[in-house]
Length: 238
Image (cartoon, rainbow, N blue to C red; front, side, top):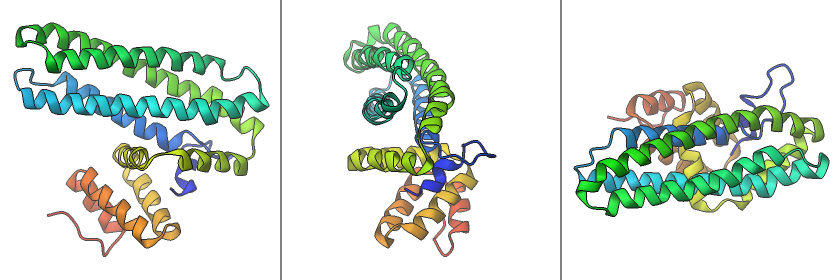
């Protein structure tokens, strides 16, 4: 993925590399989309429940994988240069792991439980998920400010880019596809255009075509058509 994308939310004056910028776009979009889907669920429709619970599980697994990669790479880098600097967000990660297990159990209870139990289980699930989303939004703000300050004080942009590439290399194909899909969904039109322009310039043609296909199937028609117009002659949606 082009590194220019990850500078877009950095301090404009300093133009420092922001390791959190792109992936946190994805996390926010996935969290909020899932929360809205669960909140508007028709609990009388078993198919709708199954679809929403699959998205819930996918989102929780995505968040768990994201936490694991931050612990392994980002927190480790912080501790190497400034011991103790990751303690606060590391504790948050332990709390998030416990919360994930509870939300997963509530989702399974809604999907597998008796119809008469669904309203109470759904209410519990909505509350736990809303708290989880809120806590993660605040947690990411801390990472983007306090943790970024440590990283940018202790590492050069070249070192941070190398760290970012190490994280990307550790992603499974599914993790990469999920991250990219939600980065595209969670980005502004201008951000998508810069991301795709960078991909076209830097990536092999097959990788760029795969990215185009992912964008085509992930974005709403109007968003896809705007992106396709900037990448002409890419076909627009009907």
